[in-house]
Image 1 (cartoon, one colour):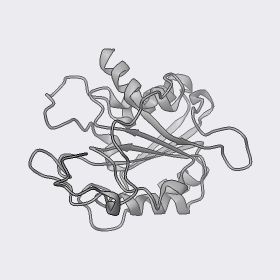
Image 2 (cartoon, helix red, strand yellow):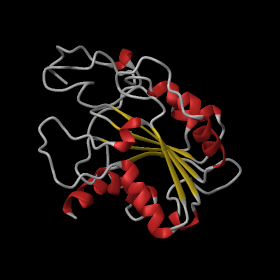
Image 3 (cartoon, helix red, strand yellow):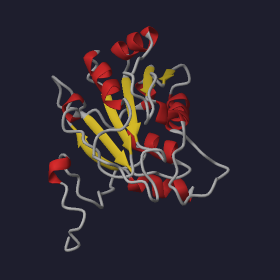
Length: 220
């Protein structure tokens, strides 16, 4: 319970614009009215913990947390997950199945989950740029091209990533760092209004690499 509370309080709502043609923001979504939910991105189906974390017995992924919350409110709802061939190291374009693409077009809510993991950066292994790792940019492009405005971007990263070219594709964007053992439950709590996303960034979100200060600038 404490891990869930801390994780939920740490989530940051970066964007939550009204849906086209309405005055209502996408989030929070009412899970009782969601009949079809689609979650894409491989990281949604795993629990990413920090480099100094232990191995907790309880580990709730985004897929598990969202599915549990939706099914609790609407037992007949359908929740679809597709990794779409994504990973933080993939070089080939993302490829959602035809069935997933059809589901995205008509879904009541789509969650695109992207981020970093231990292969992206860690102790003694720094990121070379702010670029989104792997093939997540292509996943975002593919989902955006399907034209469903009820789409949220969920990011879980070890720091800022470059979203300048994709932030306009989503009415809602939610961010957290590696969010502990109950990260999936916490994300669902925010998406569905159980928790007010009151977290704040504790770093500067640079627009792109050109804004990064020199690594030897110790006066920051």
